[in-house]
Length: 394
Image 1 (cartoon, rainbow, N blue to C red):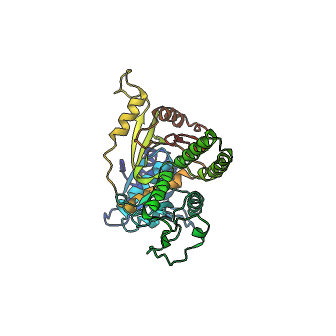
Image 2: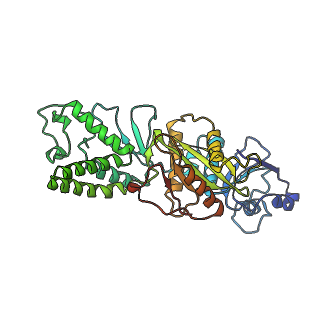
Image 3: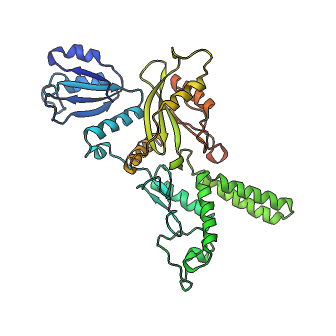
């Protein structure tokens, strides 16, 4: 995890400070006592941080100084804040297994949860996950709970799935609720529909979330075209109005929001090594990496394309093992923190439903990240291929 190790001797501080880079790094400082708690942190300038922590003690200052307590310096250089945050998380998790979460100050990502294990499924917003191998489906990560709730509620207005949270015991004598009176719910609570009819509606909702809303847009377009072909112009106009109302809901669907058990992405970040970038793979919400990708490799031949080399690195990641739900939530929190930041460095590319990456876009993205350029212009989510790239402003 930490690749470099130095012994700190105060009498040789100038030599030691000169040996470490003036660049981003994650580091750990240990004393003579192996049982003592180490100092763990990340920094944008490792040499300057060490000089402040291990330099001569200044008079009349309250700054932390560990000069007389530290014997060993362990560190790993990093190329981006995302890499630093992920490496720091892994280091804290192994060093402080009971307190690392508080040290990282996690704010878990809001998710849309589709309760398919319920006899009468419904949707809700949660920041707590169960296992991904069950029937329940999760979609995310969203930037905030308010954004997730608005998207879910605006989307469910186009369906008749229930909004109530109770476990239903259908009773024809039950009066129903406001949604059933407004014809916005099939009302399984008082047998307003058969179980088969309700199941069909739930499947439509699942298809909507799975496709990023494209399934409903296609249905509306097909219905409108069929109505026009049969000269039912009033019906066609009404369907067109519904299609126009759908667009604002789809615009709230960030490109990164996916069904988590099908989430497959590649994150490209700057690298601390020259003429290289760093790859991170995200699968089912779990982040793996980093993997250094040199632009010019001594091992590849002229006949080997950049796309094939990128694909080889992607395939070199160890087979995915579904981690515990808490670990996935922590990874999603790191991903959300980076993705929704006002100024972000790096790019993310998402695979399609068949697990195929947009290789040409990835190759162009590698060049942009290497040169420190901004990404391509964003394309509205409801008009672009969901397998396309989500650009990150650098």
